[in-house]
Image (cartoon, rainbow, N blue to C red; front, side, top):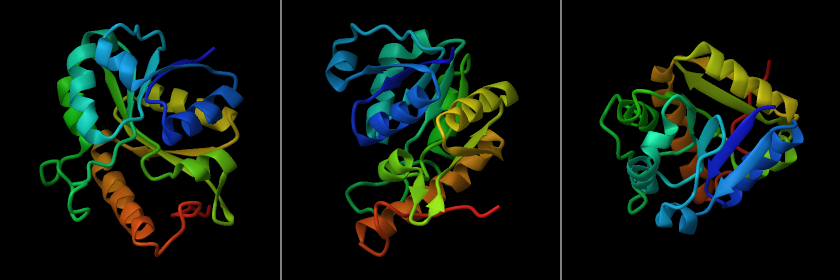
Length: 194
C-alpha cells in the first residue's frame, strides 16, 4: 500500500489526501503546529508539501533529514503574495528545482499546483475532467504518484522532467491570478482534452 505524509491541513492538503485515500493509500497529515514543534515523525514513503511556498524553507530545515530517500511532492506556486504579480524564484528556475537542490537525497516531483482544491474534490475543472500534471526526474517516483492519483479517480499525466516545473509554475501562477481577479471560477481552471 502506498503511504503518504502530507504537510498541511488546509483545503489543498485535504483534497489531495482525499484523492489518495480514495485510491487505497494510507495518508497522514502534519499540521502547522505539529511541524513547528518539530515533534512529528514522517511515516509516509512519499511526502507532500501542501504549504504556501514561504513555509517550505522552515519545513526543509526541520525535517530535511527525514525526507532522505523519500519522494517529495512540491505543490507550491511561488508567488509574490504581496503584489500577486511575479514569482519569487530565480528566473528560469522553479520552486521544485530549489527544493531538489536542498534535498539532493530525495526524489522531488512537481504536482497539483495547476489544480484547485475544488477540482480535485469533484474530479471536474468546470465541465472537463480534472487532470494532475506530474513533473520530475525519477521515472519510478512519477509512475507511483500517477498510479496513486488515478487509483483515486483523477486523471494524471507525466509532464516530463523536473525542469518542466518551471512551466507548470507559470501555468499555476496564471491560473491563480485569473481566479483571484474573478476572471475564472475556483471550481474551474485549465483542463486537458485528450
